[in-house]
Structure formats: C-alpha cells, structure tokens
Length: 149
Image (cartoon, rainbow, N blue to C red; front, side):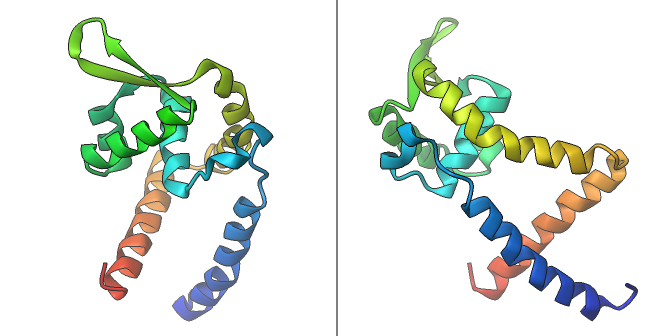
C-alpha cells in the first residue's frame, strides 16, 4: 500500500459505503417527522455525550458561529427535542439540554455509531487517533477548497 493512488482508489470505494451505512441507520419513530439534518445530529451528539451546555459552548464544539447554534436550538426547542433553561449562576446565559422525553430515543439512535468508533479507535495509540482525525479534517478542508467553499 505504498502507492498513494492505490490508497485513494480504496478510499473512493470505502467512503460512499460508509456514508450509505450511516444513512441506513433508522431515525427513531418519535423523531421521523422532525426533518433533522446532519448539523442537528452533531449538535445532539455533543449534548448526548457531553451533557448540557450553553450556546457558546456548543458553537465552540461544533466549530460554527453562536448565531448558527442559536437558530438550531430554537428550531429543535420548538419541536420539543431540546430544552433551554436559565443558568442558575448567570441568568443571562441559557443552558441547552436534550428534552427528557427525547433522550432515550436519541441515545438509542446515536450510541451505536459512537460505540463503533470506540471499538476501532481504542486499539490505536493517542498519536494514531490524532493522525486519523487530523487526516479526516484535512480531507474535509481539501474538498471544501476544491469546491470553492
């Protein structure tokens, strides 16, 4: 596998299969009518695995502007998927969390993907995991640059 072109060919076959498998993960029945987009899944994943946080904290984790997160939170709150509450220590801040009645469905939906990542990443050394993530980020950046975005 020293040939870069051979690796590229292998990845060009693998990536669509991976995307197709992810798309086949069934959306829980209670969420099917909510028109969730991939950006919503990232936000829900952060809240599921890291717990309640502010809009600014979510924006930092998602690497997007706080306004973008505010719009997503407003959308998902309106659908009953998220709850927003006042931060007891700073009444100007709002803390966002998954609505209790939606938590189990979201966990059942997202946990298998997280577990698969844990299974494949656990045997790797921290430097190898970092290289893997950095390579995926570099690929994302290269594709965006090629498309002028």
